[in-house]
Image 1 (cartoon, helix red, strand yellow):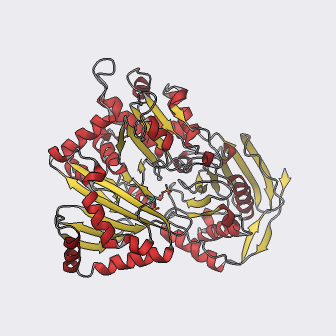
Image 2 (cartoon, rainbow, N blue to C red):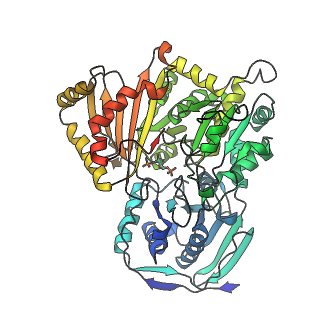
Image 3 (spheres, rainbow, N blue to C red):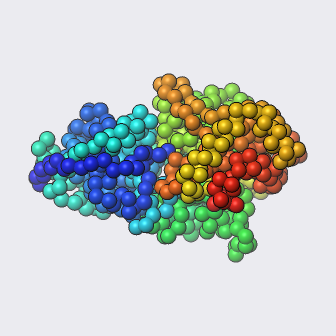
Length: 583
Ligand code: G16
């Protein structure tokens, strides 16, 4: 067996290693600085209890973006030196974020061992390449992102780090070839297993959904389908599931070959960045060449986010989770015995709240960040959850799940059309959404993103909004001066969350203004950018009157947008006359 030794290396703290909403995301050039990745990985090992490092199995993989292959070899060598027993790597270093969660929860080694956690190498929806973003985050034994107690500890460790451990003489493992490589180190054997990236995940999906009815839908001439992988890691999963298992035509897959730079694109499944899909679905500025498909979807770089589209129709993520929750018991076998509860992040619209009330379900509102759903799920309090930021998922794993969301929607369409696939007109995505609005009312919703704003200016804008809250009469006087036809603001606060399971408190999670008619404005700073600051403005208005639910959402929200921009002095603080992205 090949032998290796352990070397102790001296190092010193490097600034800016604070994990954000979901791990550490920086430019590749930052990650390539000497010791930058090493410090963070060692800080993570040091933050974990010893029994979660020594002798354990860890997963290391990601979305395949530029620098992943180098990072995997570094982490393998550091894991060996820190006493880890076994590393699991998806072939070519590819595993989607949901697949990592699935592997941690479901996979067994030949000796019966399970993984105690894993490093996910991704900057999610941010672009990739030598001058773009890289990212790393740690997921725990439940398959979910490390909680704040751990990420705070990791950050504290990065500020005091003096040394790291690495097995420099461990040869690089060929991660393109399936199989096990074994080595002998000072603390015993160490092995690296490279396995197929899709098998375990596909098995899990088959245990959740009725693949037979989905196959019937996808092979029906009445149903046309399109999926855009945006050159992220979703591609191989889409090919296995939609084409090989469910008989979709290979032509229905767009950009499904993973690329280190996502083909130069921005792998973010929204109306701005998923251009090719948006055009094909008839939502672009120009009319598409062919009749658009009935259903279109996209996933982001690491395949945890999703966008759902119908023919010439966009489903907002906030509506998507509400519709999945309303239909899950009938349409998805995994939920047939009922839902334990549902949850959404604070800025997500209240569409889910209305469904929860109607179905008498437990309901939770958590801060932005998927990690907050994990505790609820582990405690058996939540089955389905979602976020406005194109994240939807369930307690089958502890990450949001892009392919799962597509399968959930396909299941709803299959269920709604179960008796009519060969006969009447297809009940379309748009029909399903409009019927939902007719039953529950519509939450008009939009998000304005101001990306890469000067960090100081963003902070000042937020401080201004916090200060404004002190006097609601003054705020109301101000907004009546802007538009006399808006209702009064009746409450304003900074969102604070007390986890009902472990009692931990998260403060400063966004500034909220509530209007008398149920409308709401939310302002918060993104925790996932890699440069400057991103200000997010979320605007929502509820409409119960069924004669008013069919309006264009930007038109319906125009007044509130005007109020929000003037109230926050957006242009004054940021110098921006328009947002970077509107969703
Ligand atoms: C991460 C988190 C999500 C969050 C999103 C956006 O997603 O897991 O919970 O909603 O970031 O966060 P922010 O508004 O702070 O940028 P992902 O897909 O980037 O890992």
